[in-house]
Amino acid sequence: MKRSSALLIAAALVTGAMSAGYLFGAHDARTQDSTSTHSLAGARTPGLATGGRPATAAELSDADRARVQQIALGIERALVARDSGQRETAFAFLLPELIELQPERLVAMVARQEPGESRDALRDEVVRQWIVRDREAATAWMGSLEDEAEREASATLAMRTLAASSPADAIEVADQFGIGRDDGTLEHMVQIWATEKPDEAMRWIDSQSPTDPRTVQLRARIDLVRAQ
Image (cartoon, rainbow, N blue to C red; front, top):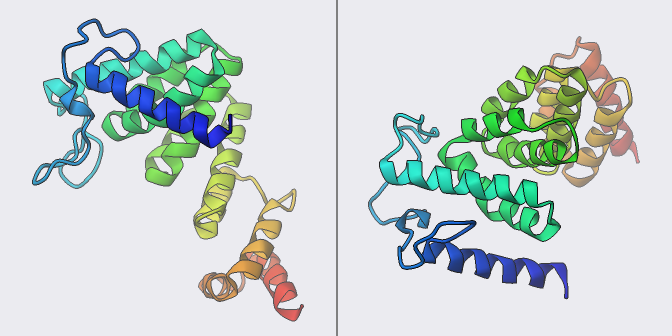
């Protein structure tokens, strides 16, 4: 079975389980989970406070708090089960909703994991999904990680994730964490950017300080692409 077909089947199973109210251990199969609906006409998105920021725990409605608990339990059980399919489903369908409702719950979840494969997998997936939704909040969390290797790994993943959609943001994150300059990563990224979107890359480099040595370094790559 192809991966795409497997994911579609998994999505259907998750959706069916959510509507029946027993996803990952809920007991009443007759209870409809109305909080799984994300777009209600005339209503705010569940879990979002005024201004679009995630609600704090105190601001969540009782229904959203119950939903957060259910989602968190599902992710934690998927991690413990060590079943790749269950984990993939949890990361694909539950983790994005928890980022939307209460991302600090994920921060606490990562912190509780012992060093090892499960912690790395959860941390990496939080980075991938959170950095494109709320760069400021995600980088603040990444910067709070106590282990230097973990901070660098998270920052590197965030940089690579952003590079696909916003190289300028990727460069900002790289410079914020002091990565990507010494090993040529940013130069390579800018070269690809200038090849695929030359006008965009030129507008960005022209907005940078011409006397900054870091600008000179990257401009040289863009000029190389233009010359070719």
